[in-house]
Image (cartoon, rainbow, N blue to C red; front, side, top):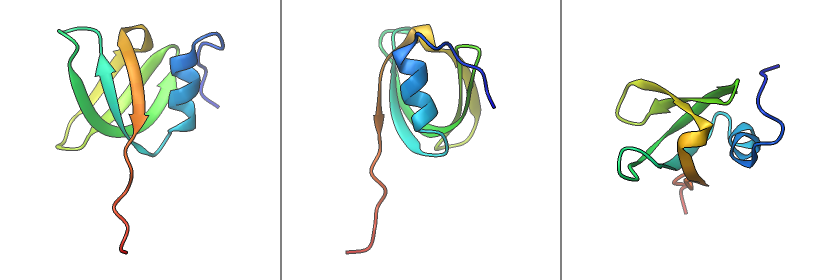
Length: 75
């Protein structure tokens, strides 16, 4: 089981979104936003797999908000 800060609402939300595609808005640089799949959340760090390739590790303290991205499903 991965450790995360129990008092961090962003961490709790991200743990719920493990394996899902999300949009995340960062505080720095200049409120940058991106989308990717949550690989893990450990020690107050988000490990994100970007949709266009690449992996980032970001401190949860640098995140403004997180939104799940709805998957395209056949109608």
